[in-house]
Image (cartoon, rainbow, N blue to C red; front, top):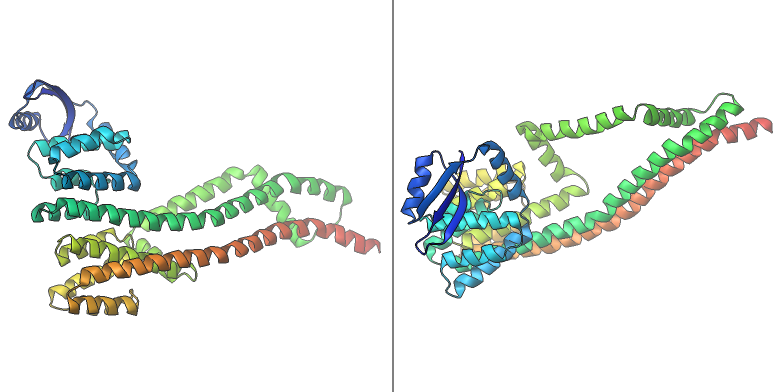
Length: 404
């Protein structure tokens, strides 16, 4: 839909400006008048498509940390008894992220226009996902918006901590890999040509490993653009393949089955599933609706497929634990704890305990994986660099042997 810039005055005579997305100019005028504004000017943006692209770009810049701070501050102000509009106005003024500031301003305007907070937030799915919007909707319906926002803040903090653990642990191995690639590139580009000139002066037939290294050096120096095209083409093709249904299934299935990465990916998936599911249930979201949100936000089609089967089974009258066991994705301990939670009526707290347990498991697995990857990367670098050096010195060994 197109975007419209407006300039209006409120009941106090204060000048306000903003942008509204609507299907027609008359709809914008009607909405502004219903909000009690005196309309000064309303114009359609000439490049609505470009503007929408800018909005999309802005939305992507809002970090998880910004959203966490927003949720916690919002909850604190509501608990203190401040009106909703006043809370949004304060959040708009103190938010440092300019893109997020614009979104909060628009949300404030929508709420002032009579929309619910959840509907206003739902217009920005790149910032406020289904989990966030549905929990806010449940909080509005139950009159516990402050509690729900506080739970959201805690949920986002734990999710951010989990991501930080993984990123921090993988930083060193990635840097080691990049460093090894740079070393190989420098050796092939600058060192190997020096030996090639020496071999030409010596003459004679070169060993096969030396010929391979020389050919690789010539290719990198003369046809480097083909190498870049191959790399970027492979990355582009892989991304396109992953976007297809069959490609995504194969990719996610492989992630769960890899020797070192698979167990860690499974633990991360279980931690996210149980934490999100538990948070939604605690906030008053119905089980079937919560499962739908969990399936959509899992980030793994194998997990999503298992959750869909769980929803179907629950509709047929089964418990949650039974279809979980049939899926083959979740560990037996998780299934047993969820079964106990269902029997005792404490499913939400049991899910949170599982999530906390697997958060610790992820931390331990990441540390173990890091301690294993570091020596493997050193061995990898040693083999590559050593292999190149041996290949370059093989003709010299052959020459010394022939002289003897």
